Length: 243
Image 1 (cartoon, one colour):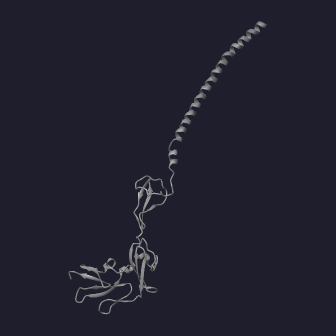
Image 2 (cartoon, helix red, strand yellow):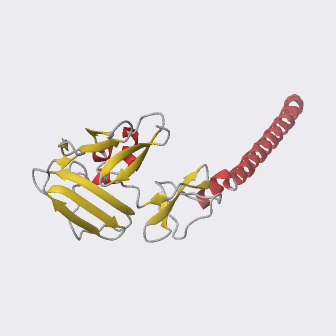
Image 3 (cartoon, rainbow, N blue to C red):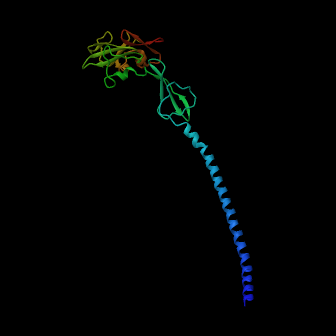
């Protein structure tokens, strides 16, 4: 009986041994597969290192500025400014502007302090100047304003520093020898063609611009084919050289 039992136990042990060996091999294979996953994770780590040294770092090194450079930039030089135009003084009356476009400084036209005209100082604009008021950087202006209800006919001259203003009552002005009188805002126009010439009153183009009467702004009153404008004794003389 004992001999039979031993024989049966031996058979059982032989049958079990191959199964255990196969299980150990499977565990070893699983461990190798896990090792491969770790390498893939390592590759992901390398990719992360590449990203940390990429464009993100470069962008962070040059953030946009909202403050104009202290010194005037050179036209065409690189810029990282994000704002309105930057202006730099050229002299006491003029400045030069720059804008940052597509990473490059671009020079704009000069800002001229004398850009305003007499028209800008009329009663319905900046107001008629007063004697002694400053007009620095306005250039040389000679203006006439018809303010008949208050000051009269105002003559104002800016010498690029100070306004020099005088006035006189508004009144009709004689035009020619026959008693014709031109009202405020009209110009006396003389034409010498024909016997004794002719005189007429016409709307003064200079008055519309608050400028003193001159051929520069009233030359259009001489519209004949051979006429040219000449200022003569406070009137527009349309001279015809071929008449």
